Amino acid sequence: MATIKDVAKLAGVALSTASYALNGDPKVSKETKEKVLEAARQLNYRKNGFAMDLKRSRTNTIMLILTDLSGPYYSELIRSIQDVAIANGYDLIACSSIGAQDSTAVRFLREKRADGAIVLAQNIPNEILLESASERFPIVVMDRELTGDGLANVLVDGEQGGYTATRHLLDSGHRTIAYVSGPQNSYDNGQRYKGYIRALNERDLSEKTKWRLTGGFVRDGGYRATKTMMMQGELPSAIFYGNDEMAIGGLAALKEGGYSIPGDISIIGFDDIEQAGYMNPPLTTIRQPKHEAGSLAAHLLFQMLNGEEVNATYKLGIELVQRGSVRNVDTRIDS
Image 1 (tube, rainbow, N blue to C red):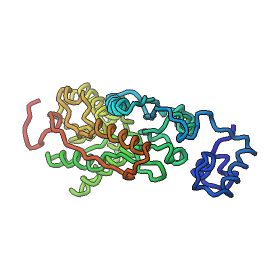
Image 2 (image 1 turned 60 degrees about the vertical axis):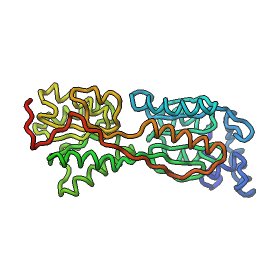
Image 3 (image 1 turned 180 degrees about the vertical axis):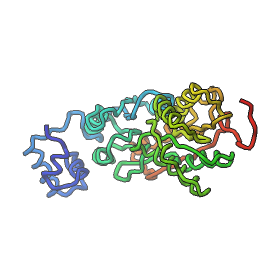
Image 4 (image 1 turned 90 degrees about the horizontal axis):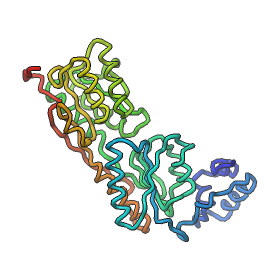
């Protein structure tokens, strides 16, 4: 079955131009529109019936597309967006991007089965978001900086978060600090890692390759990465986990190995999920405004649906939450 990408290639135009032409956008010239429509006819390309002109028909539904629907971070985000949707008389469809370009989420985007979308899914390519977004189908993206018609970005200052976490460990006297990362294709992970490296460089310190481990932003990943670190026979003084889920898994692995936290090793996370404060010891972490970010993204989407102008990018701040999993190495703690 032909796709809009095939149409664009045959017509010799950009994906976004093909999308605008097929949706009857007046800013596309008559000549270009005829070229795209002729290519569509040759390829027998058919838009799904749901891909309607949203000016003529509203679904009163918005989509939320996430990498994963499980986990405490996503749960809070879904709630915050749903509250705004309900207040505006809209329904919310939440779906996973598992499968990336072949996923139901991508099909829903291309077929415009809602009035707009909020996307936090690093495995959906920029190309698909640029192709799908328009003034009549706005998209708010939460995990990358992406510029285009019908697009807005809501970001958390992850670089400052990574820097603040690492600086806290450095200021507590730690000099060997590992970073357990999330997915390598994650914008958020990249920003946190960037802040970590910046803080190390300020103290003329460098990352050790043997401690460069990936936990995929999941609890089991943090557990496995920490086990790998332990098997190498030398642990750092402190570990910065790219999110709290991995830190909780890492804490379990360290305890199984007979290590005391923070007596033998300090750990810090990122997110400040609810469970972080109930760990033993309670987890020191970077709090990011999960509820506020979701709420802002939803409010922006409804402003765009109403034809109002919004900024291209909004960046929210972070906060260090000090609990019991980090010690000052100059202070004796009985294990």
